[in-house]
Image (cartoon, rainbow, N blue to C red; front, side, top):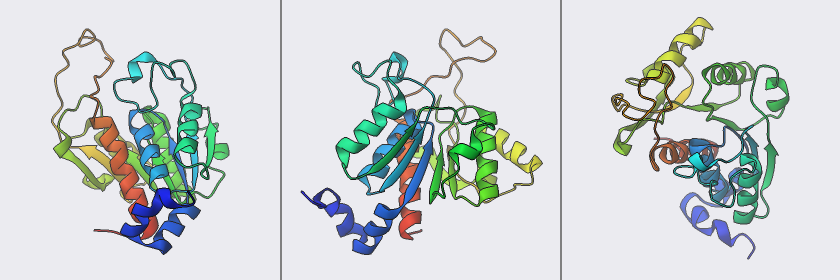
Length: 238
């Protein structure tokens, strides 16, 4: 079959751009509803080296929005299942699966490689902030996912510098905390301008309720992130 699997992307961007993609190295932190679909688009888009980082296993509540979540994968490592999927899509892809959490203690180990791009799809705010700050210090290009949960309108997804984000509660918190570290701009973010939806589920009255997620918003965040990364690697911008 040779390189036929990437024939259509080569027709779109050219042989030189495809070669750049196949030589590129991209890390995805958080392989959930956002990160899983980002990985899917990256490997199908021709990215040759992928590092997948997530500590968690697939559970039944993931099935409504996570591409690797199936009845047959419940209980298995998310990174291992996603790595297998990547190799089934493109046997030549080099996938490194790391079942571990990104923390301040693991940062140096996980960011040891000189990635061409880093995708932040982490849920935990403290870890998210540390990853962004660490990539800035290392001058690693990073794109960060803001809040994809509790959203329903796909037409309100935006890509902007973090300094320009609006109406996203998570983005507001990230902006505020980054400013304390002297980071005002230069971080690309995917977010939604949809107004916060009142919670209606059984956890609605909890102090830290579990937010609902649709089958399409987190995946669209991930696909948008992958699109930004691919366009950056091949040098195509608006």
